[in-house]
Image (tube, rainbow, N blue to C red; front, side, top):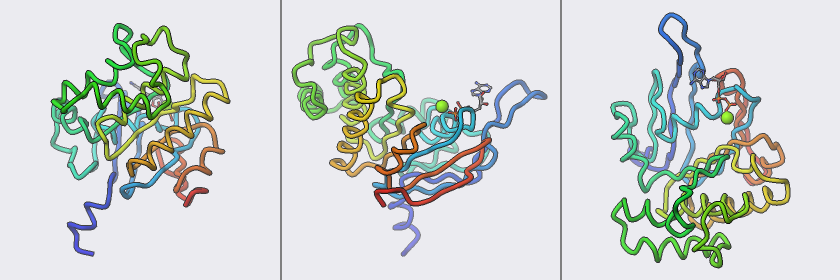
Amino acid sequence: MPDSQTRTHIAIAARNVTLSLGESGNQTQILKGIDLEIPLGQSVALLGPSGSGKSSLMAILSGLERATSGEVTVAGLDFGPMDEDGLAKARRGRIGIVLQAFHLLPTMTALENVAVPLELAGRDDPFGTAARELEAVGLGHRVTHYPSQLSGGEQQRVAIARAMAPGPDIIFADEPTGNLDGTTGDAIIDLLFGRQKASGATLLIITHDPALATHCDRVIEMRDGLIIADRAGGAA
Ligand SMILES: Nc1ncnc2c1ncn2[C@@H]1O[C@H](COP(=O)(O)OP(=O)(O)O)[C@@H](O)[C@H]1O
Ligand SMILES: [Mg+2]
């Protein structure tokens, strides 16, 4: 396959990525040389003990944080030379992020939480798109509710709708069920994978739940800032 074609079917590429944090002279190396390639459309579970660097790696791959060294190419864009503004622009429309703590804006309704980012990105019909996306996550009857009027599971559905609405190439989810009870969490996982399959997006999901690996094409395990295992998952 020609090189250009090879690149376009890769959603995420990291080469020798390191991350060091802390004052100079007293630095901690959080990521110690990560090499990773994830093809478009693949679903990947990222496992590993607390403190192993999973969230740090996701922050770099999703453009929320800059690597200390190494190469990061995501959705066809080289993150290396980009500053914070550049990364924010790169994320817009291409990358959807779902976090443990939902992060909805409390003064906005469910509909506004999904529509306003679309509006800011200059998309056509942001409120129509947002309404359809909330319908798709089973919240068509909750669009005028504020986050405080929604259960944890419902808030996470809004966050998933917000992440999916722009039609991103890649979805990053960091322990999306961490604040939910088991039954609610299972429903959120089914929803997330359902929306991923419907859209064809790449999904990288951090989880403490090894059972989730059965939903994924691939399972990557981290320990102490390094990838220590990379194998096929139950859905491969
Ligand atoms: N801002 C920071 N400054 C210094 N160390 C940090 C910072 N953020 C995270 N760490 C450390 O980096 C390591 C990896 O953290 P993290 O990526 O959150 O791991 P995980 O998501 O696997 O639990 C941990 O040892 C954590 O204490
Ligand atoms: Mg984490």
